[in-house]
Image (cartoon, rainbow over all chains, first blue to last red; front, side, top):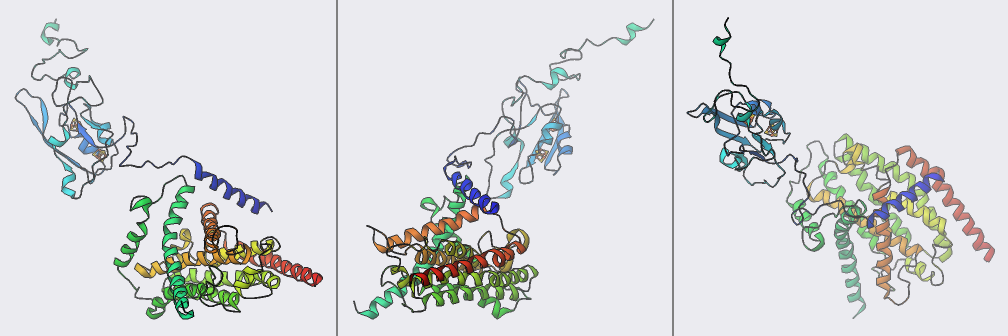
Length: 174
Length: 317
Ligand code: SF4
Ligand code: SF4
């Protein structure tokens, strides 16, 4: 008798689900809540003083498992590196976030935005103009050049945060 | 209107009603399943997603109508037609209201049993002619399953026939004026319901289809509207079984206040809903479990029901 009872009980339980709240989010009319660290569209951010954060180190391109990041490094007259062009092919990106993990400067970030459907594949290839935003993204006051030891325009050796002034090696001679 | 005119109306209604209902049921089943799984189901195309069926039909019609090279062409094409023809033929003896029936056959119930079991040929032939292992297994299962349930299906109905003293479905309904047969024939109803599930190849007895093991069973190789016909056949089969349960056990069109046709449809829809609810909740049984259930539980139950009914009727004189 117990299989019959359990079948009837299953029917009853399933029937009661009729009066539950729906789990579906009716998408275009209602936006689902995406947490701030959701891995969606990728952006390139700027440091607090408005400079490009990316130093064109290629680490993101190397980390990307589907090889969808391409860029070319260049330098300005003060020796500050930046990407001449930066291209992400979103038709291949799997939004794994490895690029963000790999980036030493917090330049590349995944943001909670997923509305990027297109009818034509080439429209999914984003260039640097499409990627670069005007703010610092998720990390408000991080500035790579302010903590790094390299000298660039406007910042000499020893001027970085918690960095001592360079030692004159010759003065140590006996 | 002259007699012949009414006959034509009946034929047209009985042809269109099952087809339209089947189309509607595709939508209803998806919405109901969704409802029971905390989803919404198709709700985008047209009001409440009602036009989804139309969109699906257009899609099916425009799909490539492919016949696998190893298939037996003629049989492969004929199989989906058989199921629809058989089920539609069954509707000929279903009375919607007093006098509203295409043919008021004296052996209506026998005719219905005959046509609805012929539908298994469609499944078996489809499985055999597809030239695919999965289809063949599905077809074999359908044939064996039919042997399993067809016997107790017939036997379970005999109780009703004995009480009404007729095979004529309209007469059986009229005989339920005082008391619906679900009361005195409760065991028979249960056995028939289980058989109906197996007959329409619905979960938990959808072994010939068994998506999780046989891809799609007997219609694995079908595409386009041929697949659509199997689909329509299945839904019409559910409608046929539900209306049969309504007619034989729940007093058909009998009921107070509302017009008879409405009562018939209300009761039928309740059973269609039950069919879908069962699909939403019960897992598929194993093959030997189905056989055991049929031969070891349902058949004896049906026989006992038959004998007790006969004894009571005899004792009453
Ligand atoms: S999220 Fe993953 S796949 Fe997309 S660009 Fe970054 S590393 Fe590549
Ligand atoms: S985005 Fe980050 S990881 Fe990629 S090249 Fe620029 S600095 Fe390097």
